[in-house]
Image (cartoon, rainbow, N blue to C red; front, side, top):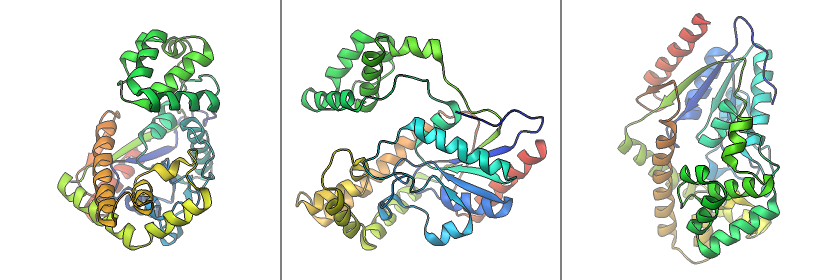
Length: 321
């Protein structure tokens, strides 16, 4: 992955992170307007075309306020890895910086953000055939079964992965089998390539939990009222129940699909979506609290006081550079 060459005064990169519903997009747009910035989305579902309401993508009005990147760049069903995201996002922020504008990365997908900033180790090329076989084995016999297999292949990697974390287990087993070597050994030998050539300012949003949960509940209601059911029905008509169309398993779409199949009532699907968003927000905060050098702001990103605090942080970082 290319990065800008280091200079005496490296360009600034602003990263806005935090849980879903915390107002990250609103803050990013406000900063982009104030500092001649451009927004780079970091969302593993918003990258897909045709998925609009359930992803809470920035509206056309919001996108008109500041240029946006890494939205609608992949077709549903097209594999899109964290590594591919990092490659495209690094290209975008380099181009923004070369235009003498401020790149602002915003989003809640922790793995994508880590791939962008810290890099991923260059493991073997993905094998969809092998991965599908491992997924089927996990569904048939459970994640702990695959974890036992990983324990034999790579005890060090297995010790760091929870037995119920199927995606990470599958990837680790895939790497071990494809490379014929333990993933942990490859990690030690090859390492990973962090982003270079930028000074990074990480701003985290940390609104009061009950207020966040209330906002998430209201947002889910608006999604249902504003056409999420119709959008999901249209997407199912276009793509069916194909397993490779992973956005259909994301929050909101999955529950509406259950409603459309008659497995849930509308009220149950809404309640399940609200609960799913609350659980996701909690997991995001657990992940992001491990991020280094984050300046946490207590409030939502559309709060004028939070916007003011964030702008002062950006101004201070610019002066320091």
